[in-house]
Image (cartoon, rainbow, N blue to C red; front, top):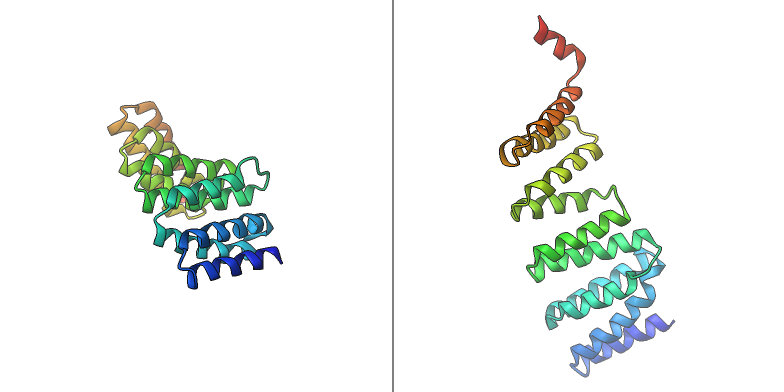
Amino acid sequence: RRVELLREIARLHAERGRNLKQAFWALTRAWTEEAGQGLEREEVLYYDLQELAIQLECWPDLIASLEKVVDGSYDQDLVARVQGRIADIQDQWLKDPGASIASWRKVIAAREEDAAAWKALERLLAAQDRPAELVVVLERRAALSQDVPEQKALLYRAADLHERVLGDRDQALRVWRDILALVPRQNLLRFEL
């Protein structure tokens, strides 16, 4: 009931009063109350809130509101979902890859097997030319993947980075062994003949 009242207040501020900032704060309070109630209940509010943030360009305010909800939360799904949204804002709107990387790491800390987080980290670390961190992400993505060709491709990139960029042949050799472990035994026998 209170959330619906706050949504109505936000709508009135936006439509009649033309006060988008007040609408943003009313909707922020509504989203804050719904955030812990599950994705279905808070998602619509979040996207309305994001639309206001686009119009107002008040990304730091939105991030502060999102962080306030997840600080100290034990709901790991909520933490992962909200930190992912923060990471997207930092990447797409604020153009701050360092902050986005830090937020994606919080997603992984909350939900270690989040494939989207690992992919985003891979993209950002590659763009930032951070090969030592990138090889860890590539190897983790390979471990999480169920697709053998994808595993091989990720591990190949990791081995190549270890050898050519980081100059660590021992680690490269370890990763090459992991790649060979993915090759079916009958294919290896064919090479021996």
